[in-house]
Length: 362
Ligand SMILES: *Cc1c(COP(=O)(O)O)cnc(C)c1O
Image 1: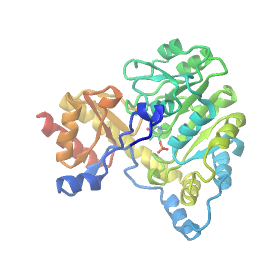
Image 2: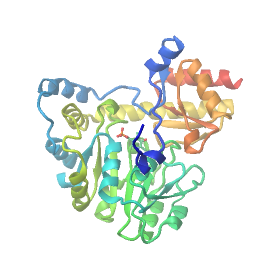
Image 3: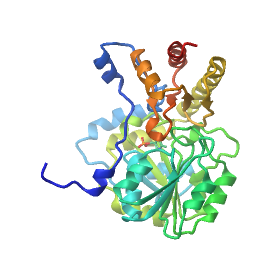
Image 4: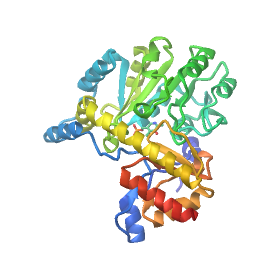
């Protein structure tokens, strides 16, 4: 190739998605494998969302509503806010990218944890930012250490709460103290992709905090509890001044019409969300019990996934693949001795435990 590629493309770490079931079965010539690798909803999509997709199908010759009018109106009602407080993206991932386009210039310092969700690193690299990462403490964001990395010029800090892949969450007091150490010129991105699953009592609802901290944007997604990962819809909640800039830089028709319809309907599907949360809590307790019984150390989780310490993470990941069980290898996050397991159905959870016990000789 004769062209010189951009500096950001040269440096960028590549996002490693969970392996699709079809790919594994094709490669190994096996069947009946299971995927617990992408924190997807084991109960499937919201039935109301699915019904809305069916209805919207006949309209796909039209461009989608570029402003997302109906979804924003519904979100405003759901959260008790105004439509101007919302920006919608092709997944939260796209909202993160739009935040980078809107606010990050080359050389701008940004701060996050070493073990934070990898997309913060990717969008910061795309913007050629100066990246400062703080080691975690007990697999949790060390907000004090992060505050120590912030300087006058720091443009953004990123906090996944709960964090992926560690599953840990920070409490409201610590989050507020951290935000209060920052100047109002540092954007605080609080990614609440797993908020529905978080169960610690002092879990902060960042979607409400922009009223007090106008430099804060909370992110939510339809990919996890609502079960719409394949449709790609996520959103940001912030002061209208922040939302306006993000809307200016996002692509004109960034969210497709099926996704808009599904998300709007899924937001009213409280039954699906609460059932998903209950099934997840049961699965979480199952893993905690089984890991304890097998003597496998794990990181207590606030999410719909759990990180277990298995010795050689890559070896166990590959061994599980041969058993037809896809989990996530997390060496790239700095946890080479762990695997991350999405919490699935009762049968799926049982199967991953049985396969792990077999591989670990327990
Ligand atoms: C899964 C996940 C998301 C959601 O991403 P989408 O692009 O909305 O699918 C966002 N943040 C974190 C930390 C996640 O793990």
